[in-house]
Image (cartoon, rainbow over all chains, first blue to last red; front, top):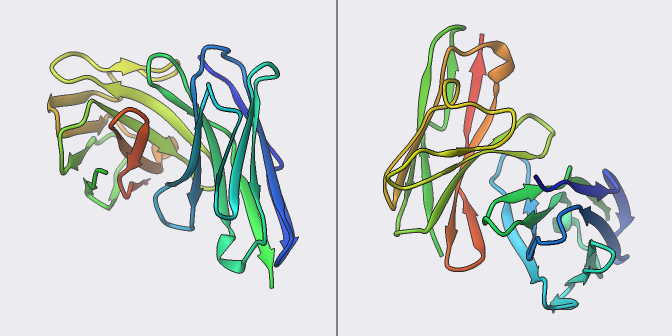
Length: 111
Length: 113
């Protein structure tokens, strides 16, 4: 099956700075890459996604980039705020519509 | 979008018993999945719940331990059988609504003593 690696496992940034989380995947046929935010005790929530035919997507302070050749994708959060503090998961979906998750990044935004 | 509910929200069970978790979606969805998330860890896909046929299990998960039903397009159950403390985890169901978007239920927190 698909193998998704995610780095870093923890990330601390000052409020207002940018945060970048990187993921790699193994299955070149994977075609859809969502990012989820999970707050403590809550369910994962989709924050942004990108399909394999797109290189970059932006939604306000959040952007995702995809390099299909290198099989890696990244989440960029600009102008971070304390409410951005959470665990972030990347995922890759294979052609059978199964989703495989990265190991997670615990982001702390320091006021 | 899809709104997903799960029952129970949490349970404490004795070793050797079984627990069935229910997942209800407020609309018909093409695919439903079951995940396990151990404390502080990522989500691990257990299986894809197929409507009207046997579930498709991921490597390391077997039907005898995690039987799954999906009688229709809005409902699925996961049973954790013959439980041991190692089964203590959060179990999440999810549904694929539309082409891409996966929505999650609130999870069932299971503690096995």
